[in-house]
Length: 171
Image 1 (tube, rainbow, N blue to C red):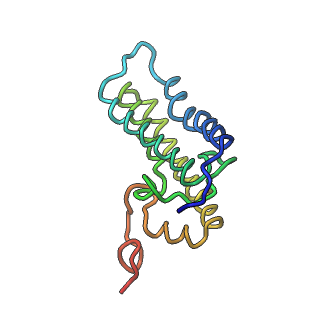
Image 2 (cartoon, rainbow, N blue to C red; image 1 turned 180 degrees about the vertical axis):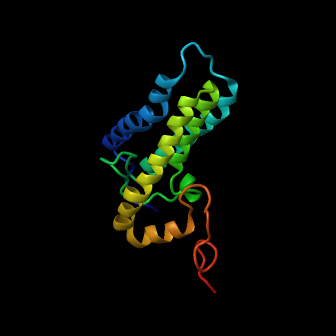
Image 3 (spheres, rainbow, N blue to C red; image 1 turned 90 degrees about the vertical axis):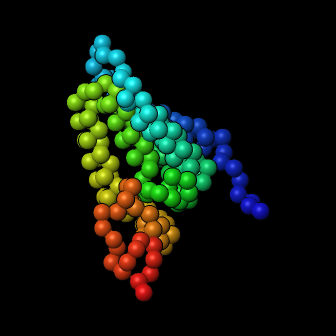
């Protein structure tokens, strides 16, 4: 039986504000402002947009419940989040935002939204490499090292780690 307390009301509000400010701006407000005037949203973008939004909400919930924190740098999770979508990717929240942006770009069929998506993909990758992963390694040490050896940074690995399959010891 776990004695962990549920996340506090204060943490809930910090998590909600972080969601509205960060992915709310990047994945919803900016693309809305970049959409072409007078153009209808094409149905082709709907599934990707909905899937990305659902994944983003799942990731945010995992940060709040399992990590006891938010997606914001000013209120990060206390615990390393390795459950839910984090079992498949170390960065499913960024994947979710990119899916949402792809939904916008497919729906409005505009180059500016694809360029915005590409620029964010690069920015997310650089942020992960130069800020988030070093911070996680310092903060969570062996737990991070084990997790990073088992779970790909994005959705798949471009190469296999030396010694065999990810997460397995060399024989």
